Image (cartoon, rainbow, N blue to C red; front, side, top):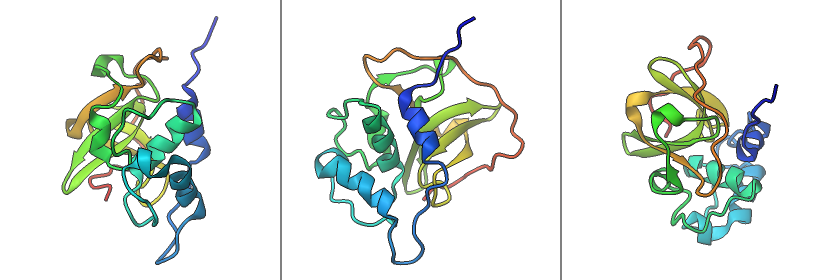
Length: 172
């Protein structure tokens, strides 16, 4: 029997679980290091403080670490920029590592799909409670499901229970 492994970018994201913003005016050197590696050309801006929303930065960093081409993204730091990146993926074909884009008051949020229950997607993302974490976001808020172009989708939807995973309503 063979098992399907998860995509390299999701494995990388899991290694960063728990990474937090620095308190107050300080900055987490790891988060700023991701920005430096990606540069203003990919991020679409000079990124110099972890108090600036960093969910898009997190996604870009994980994809870059897996060797995924990010040249087609215009402003990777902006969550909703991921809405048009890569290939569309229908909800019934979701697999761990899919890039999900969500609407929220004042902007958007982007994170990696790790599972779902009846009403929420479970996502691993950055800037969720000011850290890399897994949270539940309402399926009705999802505006895009994406996968890197030219990369085979590994796996299928993962149905999990809702207990123990916090629900997020605003990832700002």
